[in-house]
Image 1 (cartoon, rainbow, N blue to C red):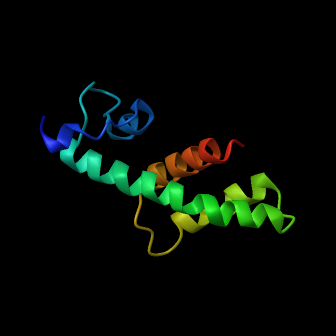
Image 2: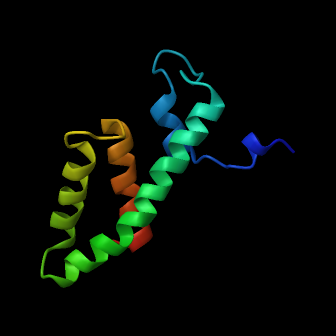
Image 3: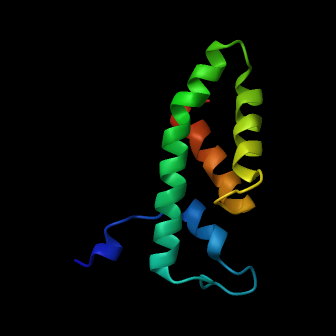
Amino acid sequence: MYEEYQVEIPQSFMALFVDPVRTKTNAPRDEVAARYELCEDLANMLTTSAGNMVFSLVSEREVIERCRLGLKGEGAVVTEAEADWIVRRLTELLGW
């Protein structure tokens, strides 16, 4: 099996790369896979920080908004759509 197909990309992430007019992705699969791995890694890395913020008497909603703003801030390495996906994935990982 080729290495590029060993990463299973969820449909929720693939949807970020599908042109609304067409049913095909607007980027090569290896590029989408690399972006997915980056976003998944960011979501997993944020779990510790987000969990710690809740213990500082900040609401879960506020934590998520702070993470979203940070991901979309100056020097962002992800697109706005990817930032929104990361925040959704973060809430899944934390069970919020």
